[in-house]
Image (cartoon, rainbow, N blue to C red):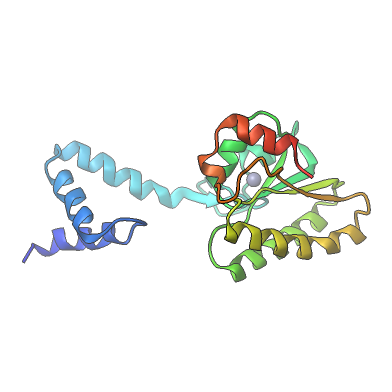
Length: 201
Ligand SMILES: [Zn+2]
């Protein structure tokens, strides 16, 4: 039997995605062999994660000491085009799309949890758009070209249709299918993503 303190940490690591109990044990024993200061630094980095909040418009993660209205650097940036919103599943998809430098609108993170949660987020987006009282010309659905991604796209298209009553000029587009089926935005290189962005319809 391992000491409780070690077993407790193994159990925590084992909860992480794609980490099994054996790998979790390896992590913990690795940490045990590190200098005490390094272990403290590691613990602090986890502790400080509690400062991470989500942007009040796009749901992207952002660091903040308070819980009031928080906007991420993209939503705060006056040079971004508010009339365009790109729906993505994950924060990391934003990082990748930003790298292409071919998009100057806003984003909206819909999450990768269950479909109900995504539906709630879509409804939140609609109410945030209405509240913003800004022009809206295009919503790009940039979900992964996977079965789940396709399901969200259908959902989103149906949900967002009601916005066309308020914004008759609104176009709802999706990334061009330069993205081959099964591909996830996260693993796409810049050229493929740029083509997908330019080829949206
Ligand atoms: Zn934001």
